[in-house]
Length: 334
Image 1 (cartoon, rainbow, N blue to C red):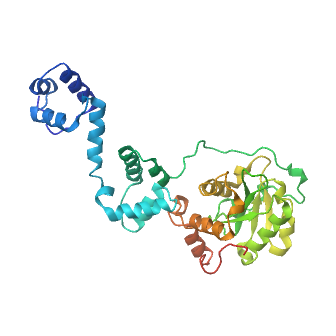
Image 2 (spheres, rainbow, N blue to C red):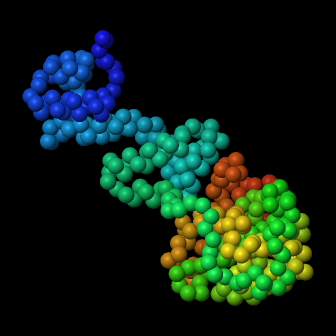
Image 3 (tube, helix red, strand yellow):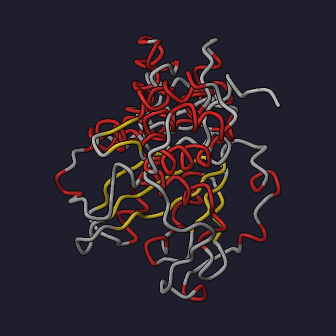
């Protein structure tokens, strides 16, 4: 049997080295037992022996840490800076990876995750976790209890009657709206989401009352040409009870999810989940100016999305809807 001179030590071998070393065996005896070269055993002991002697777990951690020192993100300062810049914007490692690939730079998102994990392990500085999106505690559809019964909303039209072109996102100009609620009673932010491009606007509301919500929607959508304001889909909350006042001035149709099924307007629900990174439930919305909310929306709209081929909502909005978000139309009522 040939000696495994160039293979890395595994956990079983390290456990055996630790056991035999504690039993007082020599390097040559351990090497013979493991079918390894004595020089390999000697090197392993020198590199990975700690203050309490050679321990298999510690040895494995030390070996992994040394291998990581040769990682590309540590060797390439410019690439590391580009990756961290994307993470600071709130992009996920996958979004950063795919966006850099479009620019001719290759780094897998798994490598980015490992890089962050290694920095935490090496420095014991958990501030590195701030570079990663907040993990979701649960997955799947989560409906909201309560809300206005569907029969109390005048001129309500079911989502089942929404055009197929709106459902499959083929046609621009179909929107979804929702309210983000916060810990302080009465505080709310209106979210308006375009289904094709995923472009999203957020506007602070004085309350959950239906009248100001309708006024905000009019202010947001009125600057658009008729072809780009075809429909809006809501849940059955009382804040959308005046939806019918949008029909004539905006020339659009309104549709409603089934009771307790807000996931049927999944675009805006997904947007709300992403926006919670900057607007957690404990936020005092009154402390945020319209410009600050606009800045959050711009961060969201300039983040590449997997569902868009890692283009940004702003890029798709500008191309498909023939608008330049930064200068021509900012989806802002002010």
